[in-house]
Image (cartoon, rainbow over the protein chains, first blue to last red):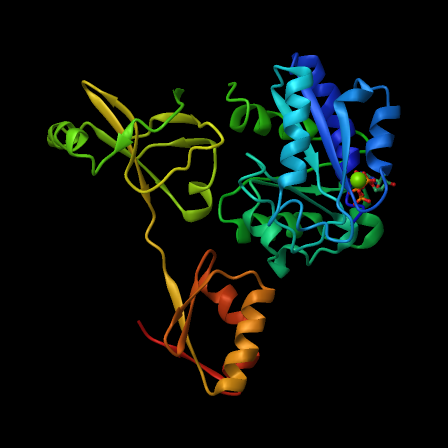
Length: 191
Length: 148
Ligand SMILES: Nc1nc2c(ncn2[C@@H]2O[C@H](COP(=O)(O)OP(=O)(O)OP(=O)(O)O)[C@@H](O)[C@H]2O)c(=O)[nH]1
Ligand SMILES: [Mg+2]
């Protein structure tokens, strides 16, 4: 929790808007609509293009075993804003064991952050191992929390055996362009 | 980039088989090897064994499988192949160990198969990662590894 998923969305949205990508966002909050409301108020995106799916007590279920609610939300967005090029979905209450159903998402970004500890990659959670893209956020905090960022990144690359890893700072937007490039290439099939 | 938007048939189909066989003789069949997870995808950027850059974009209701033919042209075909799976075979010492192991494997969301008194675990990552999770079980002999 709090690794910077919404912050990353706030950076991604303007980049895709600039590219002319028709975009919508689904957030999965536990019982509130906090993230959705934050995005709707941000002025970055037409508020109606952001919807919240309330995951209730079971945040994993809606992204893995039973993605029906999220699929419905995506379908409704697609109907209303047809044609949509991209739907970004933020999971709620993530932890290291969260995974996404490939039925629900075409591309899965796992966001961890430096302040969670340099040993996260070594713990080899399924998100760290399997996600299409691993983002290590809050690069700026490394010196403050005593994390050797270079070692953490190396370890992440190691355990992911060739799958990409990007180190970002979503406060400043550093390396967010790299994340956009990965999505553009692997999801939008552009470039 | 070559865009592939559907399954045109199965390599095992009688009417496709002959054509594929002829193309294969001329070394014109390209394969895309996918693991089980990638097989579940509807959208995927990947390369064939001959290096062709492919963008697979399937309808939501279509599912890839071993032998699915995604392209069939006079001079080229592209076929999906499932990568070979490896399994870890575990033998619990007794019923109590079996219960515990089953609970543990479920907790870790491991994909398993039941082979009589053995539990088979599909390796979807490095073998040593799986063994590390089983450390305590192996150390006190509650389970043993069975060679396959
Ligand atoms: N220093 C620093 N702070 C960041 C960065 N990215 C996000 N934050 C801060 O981290 C906190 C959590 O960010 P969110 O974007 O809300 O995190 P989240 O993953 O969406 O959190 P949940 O939805 O609650 O799981 C906020 O206070 C952000 O301002 C970063 O790169 N550097
Ligand atoms: Mg959030």
